[in-house]
Length: 89
Image (cartoon, rainbow, N blue to C red; front, side):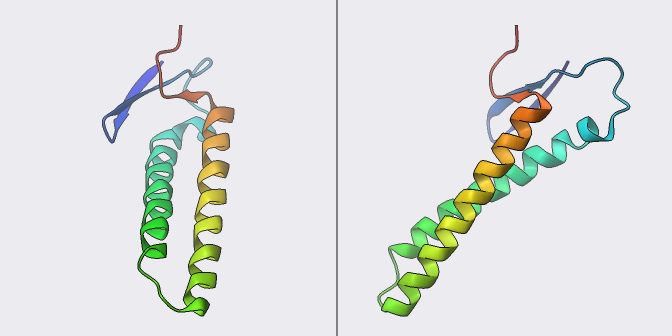
């Protein structure tokens, strides 16, 4: 089991057997991608509060939805790899 820290959160990765699987060697990269995706989603939400034109509102709404779906997809991928944000018993 490996322990990683990202943005003040501790993640424990439960790896079965040896660490030769390429899927599990990508976990630190996956955590970084998840964090970047979360930041993109937050920035899109902040942008929404700054726009005034209707065309920009439509664009920012699209951007928010796309960022949210990407973030959720990456969280599901992390869950499938066995990553958790809490200690694994």
